Image (tube, helix red, strand yellow):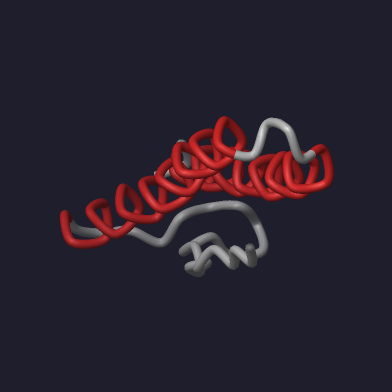
Length: 81
């Protein structure tokens, strides 16, 4: 079972500030946060379904970890606007 999450670019610049000036950009940041959360929720379901396959569980945990890190960076980025 192959699973490739879709990634979206954040609006952070090199200095870590978010270039948002209107509500539309704030909505975009919220959408960026929603994507990794949905991936993590789906991965938790897959982990439950594949609990007897350690290789699959480890693969899903690795993806979940990368999505949690992605979410963390979006939150840090968004806290600057």
